[in-house]
Length: 275
Ligand code: NAP
Image (cartoon, rainbow, N blue to C red):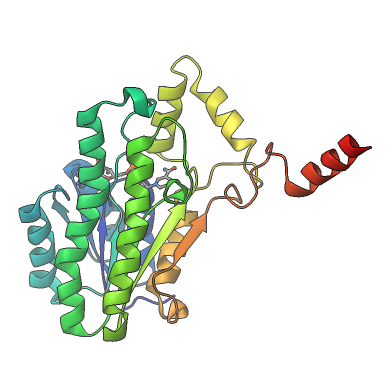
């Protein structure tokens, strides 16, 4: 995966998965633009890249605001003249609460960042890539875009929407040389998953983690770099026939959650019950 001479734009690049991906692009030769609401965090990602004699600059932007999105696109074009890879990643988790009690303002804010932010990124980056006749986009979804998760109505709805946006955009632009895919991580060891665990059990977040990890076939939370590696693959020529797809990076959680009775176990139980 060689990104020499390429320009990579990463939203939410100041922390977690976005930072790991920004570092991964830079290590493999791309000039990186780090976009984040948290300007200190974005500057730190840039420092980590440039101290290694690689190229990066940061833009403080709120992905929910059209003007800010136009600013990060224009800043990239002014500096580098093109956008080859776009990781549309910034997102928030919202609160953990049942749908019947969910706060409307929190719902709106999750949809604003996770859905409108992704839409605005596509809305303003795709024209650049279409003009170039080339480009790759990876939208950040989640396994919450594939299955439900009680207590997370806004987040689950938002990530299902990201997969929808991905399919629509891929159908529209793939014949023009632009590929659009989504990545669906399971629990990844960043601020976000630890914050969610603390919401579920403020007294003992580590108990939540242990319980969740026991449901994952690989037996552990993923690392940010393990998601970054898949994003880099989807942005590289190695995935040249992949578009409109969702890549799951979850240690096997969705395919075969541990602790949930498998079909074959169920059949054995039913046969026993029949005598
Ligand atoms: P993170 O460590 O919290 O990083 C998210 C970054 O996005 C933060 O720097 C955050 O800034 C920034 N951001 C939030 N709202 C923004 C906005 N309106 N405009 C610009 N930047 C904004 O979380 P992460 O775990 O790396 O999550 C990255 C993405 O992966 C999210 O879309 C998340 O839904 C998805 N994901 C995460 C997991 C997981 O288990 N960690 C699993 C599946 C999917 P602030 O710090 O200022 O908020």
